[in-house]
Image (tube, rainbow, N blue to C red; front, side, top):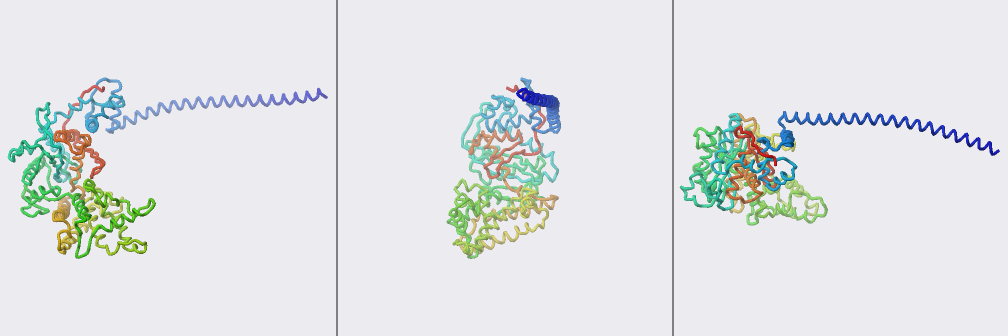
Length: 567
């Protein structure tokens, strides 16, 4: 009996051994198959890696042939890996000039840690050249003559924009050029006015802005102190003559609402400022005079919020109390929901510095605010809110101001359909109903309002009203003039002085973001802008961050690349 059990057990064990043997054989075959697949995949991965590297090289080469800036820079960096010296591309040197001017410490850090191979400081200084007034004036002329060759007769029409930037009074002796910087410089006219020994307080800059093609050329600069209307007229005509001699056509003059500019415009108009005058350089042509519309809306906002001034149109009050009541309601409400997002203390009680913001001035009159006010006009009592009775004239005034600003701030040919706002459509015809609204309904509204007031504090100030009237008529007449001479469309945003503001912002940015720079630093920054042909304004400015070229002429003249060691 024991023997039979042992034989049965042995039989079972043999069967298990046979099953395990067959299972091992199957696993060995599977292992061999998987090893073959792994080997095949490794070979394919190796081929794919080589192909990818080859493809990346081909893509880089293709982009280089297309003159892609990033590809050209990468190719230049690869070329310097095995070299101690080499030739830099001029485009690289231009960009490095701006980068070094914005932050010399960061530029030096990038070179020292070896992340990038960049031109040395000596290379950048040789490329820029000596900083003198003669050099900058020569660069301005070169830019004008290089740019005019790239544009048609229609594209050469532009606006001459003038504005001032405050400077820190300081005199600096520059050893390399053996010159003193910081004194009043009116192109030689300072001697006639006895200002040659006075320290300059402002930089007067002239910019020429294209009306059909986008270019913004610095065409003149002067260091001034206590600028008068007579001096401004003399300098403006001198700059205008140089622009016309280069081949461009000055169609408009744009300035801020300063007493100096008003005297200059009054002199051109022969008395009261007119939106159109006879061109001082050609009696057969017209010259359109205009004030920048951005300071106008800021002045309107300031006077609207001023507690000492109470607007009254035909006996009906136009006051900001309803806006402040709306702000109080929002402050008392709990939770994240707000009726109006763009209504804060900075909007309603701005400081002197905050009053400089154009965006906040526009936000006060925006549809986001007026639509909520119209809703409260109907439903305030039902919701339990008090102080919102009979304020329709205030809403209509705010809507009119916003519409006026929008029609003066058209800067894109596509924004109107992206925003679904017909007001932002470019002007395509002289009989556009928006031009008729500006010429008739808008100006008549202010004329009737002025006639109905019994006290000057019930209406806009005389200076603001004059600027609004002249600018509105100038915009209407100039738009029709340009359309009549062959322009396919007109963007009124090109009528502003934003490009000169961008230039001033870039000058400050190239000097360590200094809000009040000195004369030599401003001259040096202006020279860098003219040499590189690039501007880069601050993101916190009224014009926002502007990054781009000042024109289509990328360089002034063919120059050999600068040689420099990469270390």
